[in-house]
Image (tube, rainbow, N blue to C red):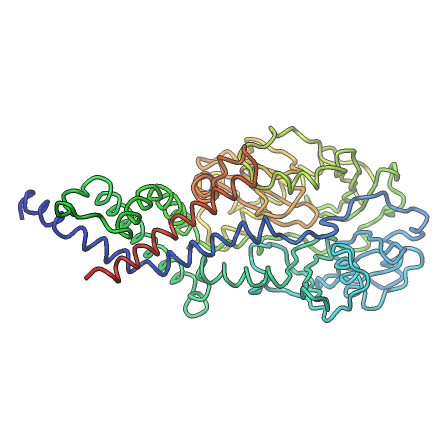
Length: 525
């Protein structure tokens, strides 16, 4: 077929193709736009405010800490543990001890007596504190070790406790007792929104019927058809309209056709940005996000804690907590210090959670010190040494799990944990930034950037020995695309409300075009 014949065939059939493509995707587009519209409404404009979102660090009450952790362990016959920390509730101070089976137990810091059902009691205490509700009846308290339809993977933290309240809003509060933090909270409205968004925007019902591969394959297919439909519509209604639909002399263009064309041209760019960034985002979902599996918290022998926790050479008025870390074949006390900026960084982390124009990051000195449990000596830059050890372990674990090493350096380190990794930069983060956003949940973290072609960077939560995130250039490109073209973060200089309004208005425009197109299809023979 010659070029001229092909051109005539395309022109002759393009309008029909556009109509067919449009009708194929009309339902998915309506689902996407309606669920997208609901996001700023529920997540931002009408989001339920909770009394507290974090527990402010405060100095350890030395008057209530009569026994060292060493004495408590010995008194209760605990020879092996994974970690411990101090927590304050019911007007008392307790040692929260995670045993070798990852079970958490509570012992009085005053006399070492075990608190019966301590996990449940502390979960209830935290949920009431965060919610600011000391009177409503608690319906159920359940420990979650897996993500659910209402507590999704996006929340990152496990295990958590789900505490359900007997209130008009049927509030559920999720708390992580091991770090005394709020994981999430859902009232009735948010539960409905989660169901709508999960099924109509993310198509999770497809994964339940088949699997995630089929789910994202379908999303890519539908997004591709929408993109082609939009491009064909832009070509027809924007550039070739007179050639396709020359009106009879004196004939007026119908209302539906006129406004479908006019609004369609104006919203075509928005449709392409939404669909293009969504398509790109979906392509990154075929590789599972398995960061939850990357944790290093080895067993510690109680006899290795040769220096009592209460005998460390510390200024106790500046100490908010103590825990353990084991690396380089030694056991260390992690000592958490209170700084003036602690009063504000927790608030700032939420305020700057989704922004392209945040304050320039400043180098922050770690507020965690490491003391050798064998002799009580301070290890200079101990938290950075611990983080480097974690990176080495996670690189080796990734190789064992089948991840491809990106370069010779990482391949060597994966094969031999004594092989060096070349670090290009490191930092201690107490705020989220463009690379490490609010979606990652965990703070503070240590950032270790490796000298690799893809600028691979690890973010490590040293308090838990967990991998908080792993980012490389391909992730940065996708994240930037999604932030700019799907969430419109470039306009956040005008304020969050304006950005949400613009996003919602754009989605509404796409919805109107789709509905007009559907009506036009039905009316046109």
